[in-house]
Image (cartoon, rainbow, N blue to C red; front, side, top):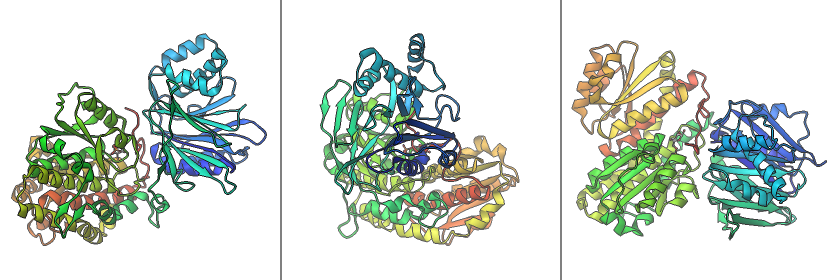
Length: 619
Ligand code: G6P
């Protein structure tokens, strides 16, 4: 949540900062701001309520010059979304400006202390407390900014990624992190002079350099125009900066002719999953290779159980993973909401494997859940999309999704990427534990290999959802039903609709419907039923009959060639046949398209739905 951008170099900072903010807008979009040290030496701060375009509009007549700057797009935690609470915040003397992503938990105590020393505050934010604290430390210790930041951060409880400018020192940029992500891009201009970029993720940086440093917790970095880049930790121990090469291309950050990132990412799924399985799923040799597991074979062979921690859409893919791993590997798998797990003193054994599933690799609750598991001695495995993310780095081993950058706030290709990765994982563990017959193993490998082509077929054959979706814009509620592997798909379908159309939707196990939700059924209520031929088909047919007899409208997802459910339905989406364990990757596609088209028909901003952020780095 919240996006930070920074720049120090020879170029004008403002265009780089604004472009970076647009890239990070998925992290929060209720207000935005920039701060630059102008050519005449002024430390300017400009802020606006709303999206980055509102900021651009508001600075049209201002001095936006300067070759050093910081910027921020906000998802409000402390203080309502308005220009005053927007970042950057000035210090009392206006010698400093600071942007922050995270939460300072002890900000009230710090603020009271600072007020007693004569500091006054303009905003309600915890961030203004931080910048005032840094200034107070500079005054108290008569120190430079770098040392003052160190002092200040030692008294802070909470999470932060910060970047800070000092009016009297226009040649240096300082940043720090704990718990919230921050990446430093290291570049050189054509004259060989150093340029530095900051970003909450790599998207604002990749255009200028592919050399990055992932700042670690409790590290502070100082950069200057002469090429100085020093990183020390809060204990003042010098750290060696490790340069990484980004594996991201710019096309992933553009809409590529699609009206929204979400639609682009839905259509990217076949290719994204091909990339995900490339080099891992070998059809000829009937082999699945995940180096993260092979290198830690014994852990998976001997573990007592697997616990998967995740949030949101990732929790849904984790549930599908549980069903598959339990079935294929005969090992108990628990799926936990990371936010619950971290606070309930769960039983964790040293011979547990704890898997974190996270697109961003930055979700604060998931990160805290695995840190808890680590403290109890469990082996940690990460399934993340974002390379170099905090969860990827905090785990003992793991597998990247490699589905490319996902920009739309509602997760689509990351979901199917997670499901196929968990399927690969299940197959590798089954091999290690010898729980599947060769025939079954080979058949599953063959079938999994065909999933991307079947996804393509599903997309091509469900193009008319566009028109159909128009009929549902009036709806206030939807129910989604599925059984077995398709129960999590029902949850995911309902979540997608809620997130981007703001229509209330519930996902339920189909058989549970009669224990409550059936009371909601009337002729106004669309019920989406995932009813593929594989897996409890007859039982789902009975569930559909129960809805029909109460005049509910049935929208079904059926297997190609199905007639029974199709005839009972008001509308059907067709998917190709596959094994029941792999149906979710196909069945979810029409549901993603349905939510997309209902939301766009309602005029919603599907890529940036209200109140949501893609990367939830606060609890
Ligand atoms: C937010 C996003 C969801 C995502 C969830 C977990 O709520 O809006 O799309 O599923 O966080 O994110 P993660 O990055 O951990 O998968």
